[in-house]
Image (cartoon, rainbow, N blue to C red; front, side):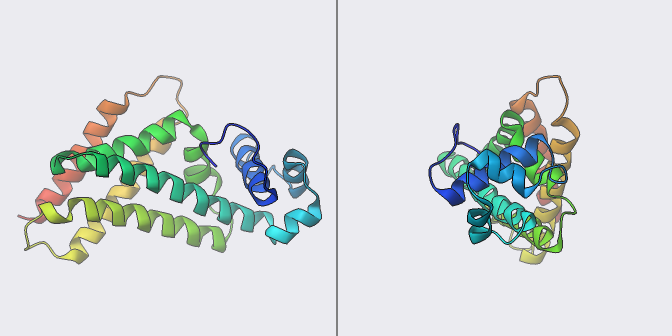
Length: 198
């Protein structure tokens, strides 16, 4: 959905895309099902064949967007041959997506907050998936004295820290230096994991 430039052809995808555009420009609360179906050029009946509510649409949209971003981050870390730079490559790609396509940050970190329990479950799962990716990226480079539980906790904390940095900067007019920000965040991540080994 994030990387589409025009309305898709399938009804479900049209609804998801219209929801993404409306939620990230007008806001979740200010968007009605009618707004979404009008933009998607489908009927309300078609909407309710695919989603039981606007909240379910948000949850479905979050799942799709999370998977798209995770795939991009995985691809970036897999392309990096040097282990020491894998986390940097993943962090850089994540913040690049959030800052170049503001829909990603707006949907994941702003508009989906506090919508419903169902949406919160999806948000929490997205954070767990990102933390698991950080964990997998650094796991082989840490001493065996560091427990997996400790690595998981630090990974979760790093996801929260990275997301907070994105939220604090995503709406500013000044251009973001992706390399500089990614280097700093990567140093924080590496430092946090390095201290586990001491």
